[in-house]
Amino acid sequence: MPLYYADERGFFSKHGLEVRFVTSGGDEKSVAAVIAGAADFGVGDPTFAAIARQQGQDVRVIGSVVNGVPFWGVAKNPSIPLIAEPEDLEGYTVGTFPRPSTAYTLQTQMFREAGLTPSIREAPFGSLLPLLESGAADIVLELEPNVSTAVDQGGHVVYSLAERYPNFAITGVTVRASTLRDRPDIARRFIAALDEAERVAHANPDDVVSFAKQRFPTVAPAIAEAAIRRMLSSGVFPATARVSETGWLQAIQLRVDMGDLESTAAGGGVVENRYIPQR
Image (cartoon, rainbow, N blue to C red; front, side):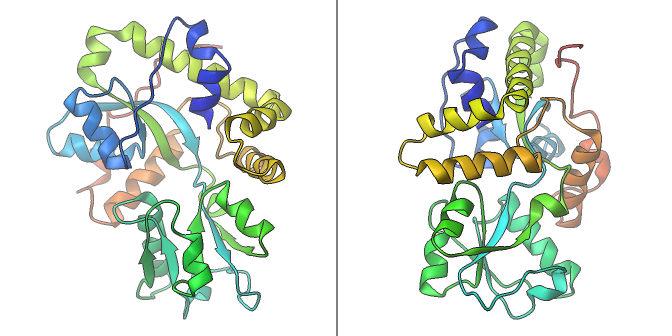
C-alpha cells in the first residue's frame, strides 16, 4: 500500500521517476529479480538480502515499506477464544502462506516458543480463508484486507502478530550494491519519494482511505476503510522509510533461529539508511 500510494499520488513523479511494477511471486523471488538485473529495486522480506549476502551476492536494504508484522490470526468458529499466549495454540491448526514465507516462519516460531509441534496448513495467497470454510484450518494467518473481510463475514481476530512484533523489518526495498555505486541518485530519489508518501499518509489518514477505495474497487468500501485504519493504527504502514535498527535485528534473529542464517553477523552492513532525506 505505501508503494501504490507513493506512485498514484504522484510522489515518484515529483522526484523525477517513472516506476513500473512487476510481480515476482514471492519474497525470495523479489531479491532474485534484483540480483538478476530484472528489476532495479525489489520489495519484499528484506532478510532475503542478508541470505543472499551469505551466499555471496551483494544486496542492500535501503528503505522500509511495511514495519511490524501485518498478520492477524482469524478464526470462524466462535468457540475458539483469544490466543493470549503461544501455549493457547495447542490443538489448533493454522493456515499460512507457503514456506519460506515470513508468515510461515513466524507462525512456526510461535508454535515452537510454546514447545508445540507446529501444526500448519500451507496455502497460496488468496486461498487461506477457504481453509476456514472447509475446516482444514482452525485459524488462518491473514493480511488486510482479508482480515477485515473475514470479520465482516462473521469471523473474529484471535491474535495479532502486529502486537507481538510491533517493530519488525518485514517488507523493505532491496537493491544491488552496484546500483548504489553506479546510480546513487536513482536510489536517493526513490527512497525520498517513498519516505515522503509514508509521512503524508500518516498525516492524512482519510486520504489513504479514499485512495484505497479507489485503488481496490472490488473491495467493499467499509472493509477497505477498516483495513487501512488497522494498518495505520498498528504502525505496519510505516511513518517513515527509515529501516529501524531494532526491527532489522528482530527480523535477522528470527532467520537465525530458523536456520536460514548462520549468525546475526550476517545482517551487518546490509541496511543503508543514508538515502533517507534529512529533516
